[in-house]
Each structure stands twice: as C-alpha cells, then as structure tokens.
Length: 138
Image 1 (cartoon, rainbow, N blue to C red):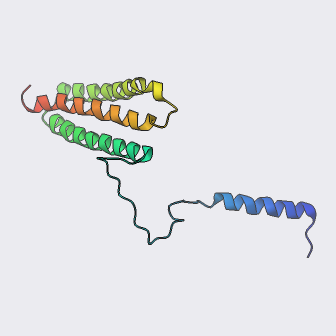
Image 2: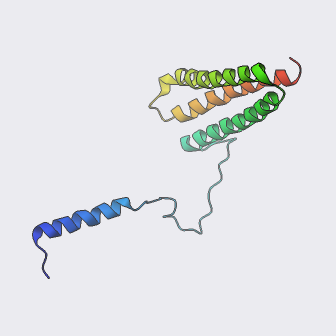
Image 3: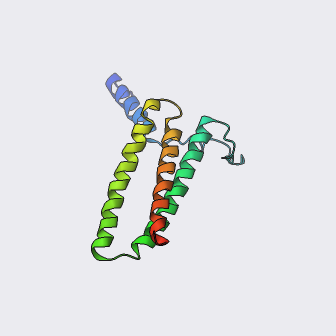
C-alpha cells in the first residue's frame, strides 16, 4: 500500500508527537554502574552543589522548626493555641516575602536559589529560637 503525501505527513506528525511524550531522564541515560556523586556541603565545588547544600540546610532548619512548633502547640489550648496558629501562618507569609525581598537583586542570576535558601534558613532558625523560649519559660 502506498501512502498519499498527506497520510505520510500525518504519520510523521503522529510519530514525532509520540516521541515528545516519552519522558527522558538524563540521569537514567548514564550507565548504571557509575556511582552517584556525594556532595560535600562543607566545600561545594559548583553552583549546583552550593544551591543543593543551601536547600538541604534550609530543609533541616524547617524540620527543626516543625519539631519545636509541635512541642509548643501541644502545651496550648483554646484561644492561645489559635493565636499561635494564626501567628505561624502570618510568619510563614512574612518569611517568604522577606526573603524574596532580601534576594531580589540577584533574581535571574545563578546564585539566586542558593541565596534564597540561605535567607529562608536564617529566618527559620530565628523563628525556632523564638518558639524555643516558650518551651523554656520565656
């Protein structure tokens, strides 16, 4: 059977579309016998590593904040508990806007993600310290 030119074009477009739908993961394209490289966050070797390390540090600070928050909120009830919930929601908004403002000048640059994570980590650690004072009797 011979395809008409319009059928051939349609088949080509259909085939090309199918290829675009197949997810391609560059990591899986590497041979599986290559070990994954560990990042030394004490001495990151690239901007990518720096951003990853800054993000990991922020995530660790956020986990600690959540632990302290859960400890504090478990000691509260009623209106006092709701005040802390409201304050924490407002603080999250403040944290995000504050850090976006603080690193605004580096937006579009290669260090932006790392700078943002560093700010988020710092502000999160400060909030953790504030909440810890409630655990230790102000």
